Image 1 (cartoon, protein in one colour):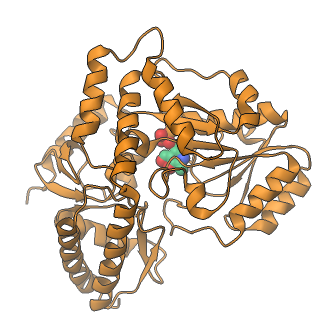
Image 2 (tube, protein in one colour):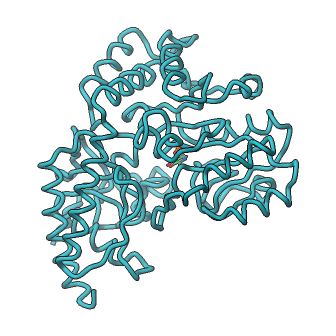
Image 3 (cartoon, helix red, strand yellow):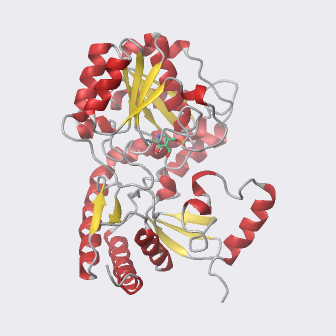
Amino acid sequence: MESPFSRSHALFSRAAAVIPGGIFGHTSPAASLPGASPYFAQNAQGCRYTDVDGHEYIDLLCGYGPIILGYNHPEVEAAAARQARDGNCFNHPAPVMVELAERLVALVDFASWAVFGKNGADMTSWAIQVAREHTQRKKILKIAGAYHGAHPWCTPGHGGWIPEDREHIHAFPWNDLDAFHTLLKRFRNQVAGVIVTAFHHPAFGDSILPAPGFLPSLQDSCQRAGIVLILDDVRSGFRLHLGGSHRHFGFEPDLICFSKALGNGHPISAALGRENLRIAASKVFLTGSFWQSAVPMAAALRCLEILERENVIAHLEQIGAILRAGFLSAAGRHGFSLHYSGPDAMPFFTFANERNFLRNQAFCRAMIRNGVFLHPHHNWFLCAALQDKDVQEILRAADGAFRLLREEFPQG
Ligand SMILES: Cc1ncc(COP(=O)(O)O)c(C=O)c1O
């Protein structure tokens, strides 16, 4: 029988001849469901996309996070096209850079300046440099298993980095204040920065919310010891609170990094910081050939306007709550117990008492066959284009997927 993904497979064969690994990075088929998932996308609109074999999916991954309003949002694309008519890449930044910095500084309560890049890792890596410049210290503390990008100090990949890249990077477990204080004691007066995400969302793991007091305690300890607290809000930014995810969880960092949802799919990232970091920020060289391109900035400005005007975060929470209740009850109807984790706008679930993700993989395979795209090992993302009828379609697909799963795993 011919595979439903024959065009994906044919393209992958061509890709493998000219691109190491065929598809590099997190979208490699090897990281998801080889043979049971599309490898290439053709087009997308709203909350749906179509793969190169012509299958349409309701998308619960949203490009791994950048799509927050829905694909190809007409207002965002019109703003981008208007800027593109004037130009994108110049010898100088365009006025829109100043407008976007002003808008972001107004949104983020503790920030008095903003800078821009293209990717999340541009900003997280620059942020730790700013912390080091400001404090004139070397050590950076991070959460074990947290992802901050693919640069040598933080990549989860195995190749191309040397132990010296991480000589001054030290990890402690999420929610473990004792381990944090042990590191602070061990490296007294040596720690430049602590970098955290607002909640823990490791690949191949349940998401874990901050324990009460965890993030405020980090803030307090950092303040006392003159350490820069960096919030990597690349993944959660604008999904939990328009002013930064620290507002959702009740703490205040010194520096915040955004990317993903900021431009609704246009390549842009930003870092914002406190006034006392302005001098360090101006000393750490920050540039890239395309980092000042104007089109993504125009897209981001319009995206922020729509996020606020349409109260998108409330919509994501509302849709997310319906999905949570629906997934849990569909699973229950077929005798499965789920471990549902993460905020409702960025949910994930695993199957209770399972460690090897086999049921997650079988569930996602069945969902993909039923026209809903999600990932077996990575948290999901909702977008504003999802409406009640889409959610009902997702839940019908889930009911069918759990029924199939029951046959595949009769023991539960
Ligand atoms: C929390 C977090 N930080 C940083 C990054 C790196 O962003 P980018 O892939 O745009 O470099 C990501 C990407 O997934 C992320 O989720």
